[in-house]
Length: 253
Image (cartoon, rainbow, N blue to C red; front, side):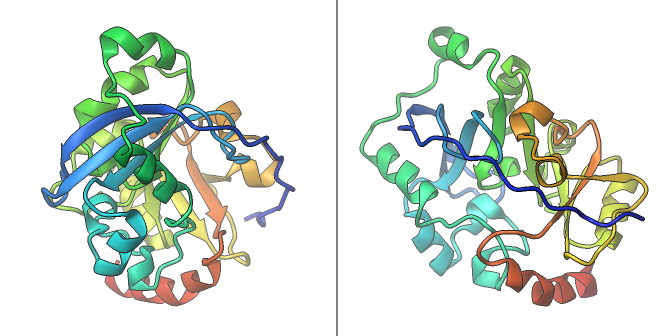
């Protein structure tokens, strides 16, 4: 087994974000009202210039949804949710809140394939800059994935009773332990395993190329549910929460 490596991340100039409302309706996970917004520009240095999709409660600001537990409508049973003590790297009072408020101000028109598919065609697409794609009817993302040059997606919902198995064709299944990764791979999934810095890669995994080689997601595209099992060292402001939460995950896996 080889050890994880580290590469300095590139920087991307900031730009104003504009986009579309892709979906307004019930969450597949619990029936609560959600919205999916696609933003066309990003300052995300890791992903590069991908179209980012944001899966949000449509009736409550995302940081408040975390406090009340209503983020389960878009994050389901993810063990890395903030209100469960998890290590999710997304700071909902930042980009997700900005997208939500822009949506509430009516700044995003409703997406129409007849009018807007030419804008999306050939773009790289990220399913779930925040929120789990499996909270959204598969039919929303399916035609956009078909239009995309490459796409990435991740889901923690493989064990959810409402999980649409078609998402296995377009998303990596998130795993928080080696045991989970092996279990999900046996079900036919490609996994995205979050690891501790001292962990080792397994023979059927490769390290996230953004971490090992500084390659942006837009130029990689391996997290597409079809290509490789990927592992990445836990990152983000809450990364120190991962070890304690990992213990709980192992117990219930």
